[in-house]
Image 1 (cartoon, helix red, strand yellow):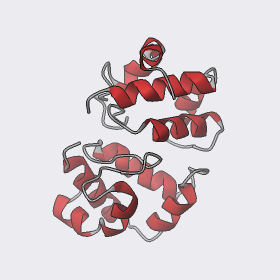
Image 2 (cartoon, chains in turn purple, brown):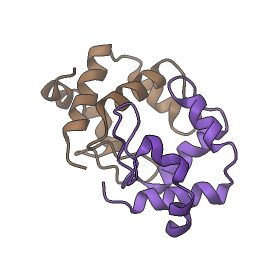
Image 3 (cartoon, rainbow over the protein chains, first blue to last red):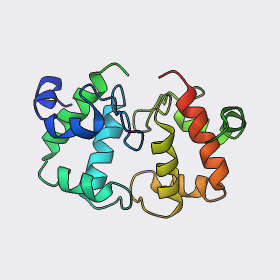
Image 4 (tube, each protein chain N blue to C red):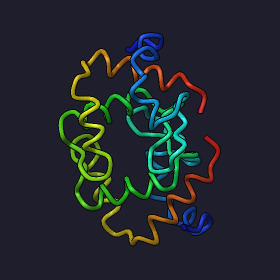
Length: 84
Length: 84
């Protein structure tokens, strides 16, 4: 399982679109706060593997391309820990 | 914009995985309650267009294949209206 504190440290790049506390102010971007970590990890892996296209998928793919499995687990744990 | 009441009527098929109130009890499925309607509509359209693969994407594609734009807008409005 991911590490919440490590995830928070790695979340700087996520905040522009998904909000400082995982609440996206622009409605095209999903809220992440309180979402299941397992789902978030799956989604990050899907973007990295090119399993999502259209919309903001290319942006997400660029952001996650440098993330390790551990990075994604940490980020997922962090966002799950936030209050929705 | 979608119609919340109509969305609720159309949500029966969604509830098995995403919960009766948009809270998914299985962690591989995302919570939908309180999510931005614009994002939910985008995601439904992406599944329908085949822009998502892997994971449960084929299941979602099958579920959304018969949905109209209006159906998707209604479902998105309904899930946005639920308390996360």
